Length: 405
Image 1 (cartoon, one colour):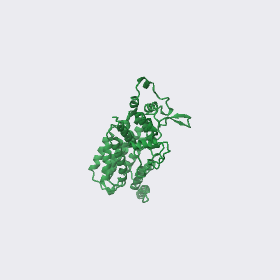
Image 2: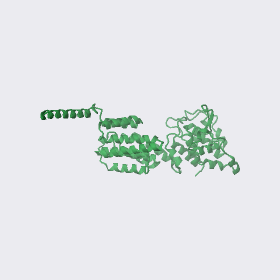
Image 3: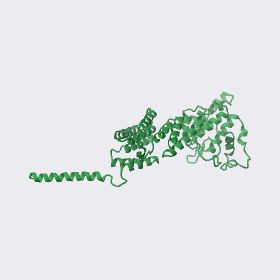
Image 4: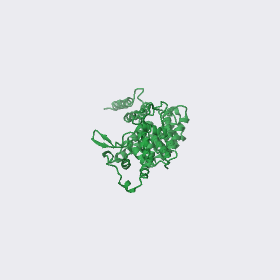
């Protein structure tokens, strides 16, 4: 082949190569909505709805469109951290944590703008709040501090839309750390930042929750068990047993009403229900069973044909009133309290008839201010779950009524 032919051949080969590469690059993401910003926003919205797999696929697509798109790596870090929360195996947990840190590292390295940096730092706050490695809260606070130094154009924040998002997620971190007053203050700062914004409604709900917890805990010392239960949106029978033993100290209080120590020493639960053998509040439940607290007795289970405690069953407000009434009767020795409101023809609560098995207990609790009555509707909300703050508040008031400190 002469030099001229060789030259033509190489030119054609180069054109084919260039054309092939260009075609491959263009074909990756061609439609108007097939772009990294769109996929990132969709992924973050999916993450907000708890659709972890959808979020991950969207972030992966964003990176496919542009592998240097920093926010998508931030999104993958949050997704992976969410998976770490559910991982109980130590080995797999470590692998997922390492993967999370790699995503964060890459997001930071690829950040080209202050807005990219903002997304990365928020991801850092969210990731460490989820995985809770050593000194996690300080890492979150440090990231928040960096955000405050950033000059960000809020209009360019594709998902977060406002810098007050940083205060919201710091509030969430404080709530997770059981630092309730600091959490309440951060949620309040979100509400004060703007009259209305993307994070306003979320912060309002979180502020109301933490404010309720702070008020419930005012004037009493709540231990670790109580603080962990305080944040729950609904408490279980196992939780309530733990609160009554650890926070109310009813074992000691009940024992104080029995003069003979020998009689106390002989007291114990009639049997140990099979479903609490490996339960983390086993001893507290056995103590409750020993004192035969009404409303917290074992229940017959049709499936197993056995009496079980069912520690994971959610406690409803009517049940809570019934249980606390029995505690109050046992502490005061006033047996008449159990029938004090029998015979009423009309109830002050539309959802609690005088014939209800909970009516007497509800009246005992509300007339003494131990549990709050209805809201605007006037209902007692007898079938609504008891949240942690409400349980702490009821115990606080009960202790005050009995002069227990």
